[in-house]
Image (cartoon, rainbow, N blue to C red):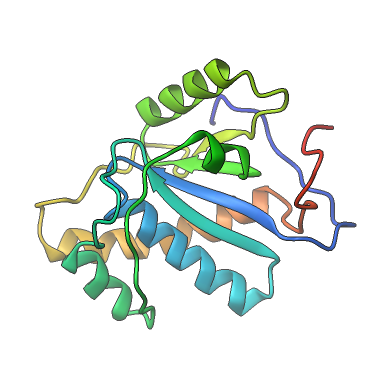
Length: 173
């Protein structure tokens, strides 16, 4: 079980919920997760807006060719350019999913430094293990990661009891 508290979103709201997926460089895991979440949300008519960012991302890098190929195999195409994690991105998110435990710790420390009155919850996308960076590990690892995300993302979204939060929120109970 994750050590972050469960987060519930009210079903009464009519606005979009912003979900942020975070990895290291924002060229593999987090853009793949956001793209799969976007596809899932469209298919199930969920009012969510998935985004991605990287803790150590270099602004403007393209998604890796392996990530692009793996996503195309499941009918997802699109342009992605990496972006680094910023206060504004954190502040605009209702919930944050990370790939590795160190990323959660880094984000929580950043939010403490920003002194958010009501920081968004930070959770591991996989409750059982880190999702290791596939960079340089071959196409098969990316393909397996897409399959893993297609299982994990619906499970995490169902835990959130997704509907939406007004853009101006409050997000705290």
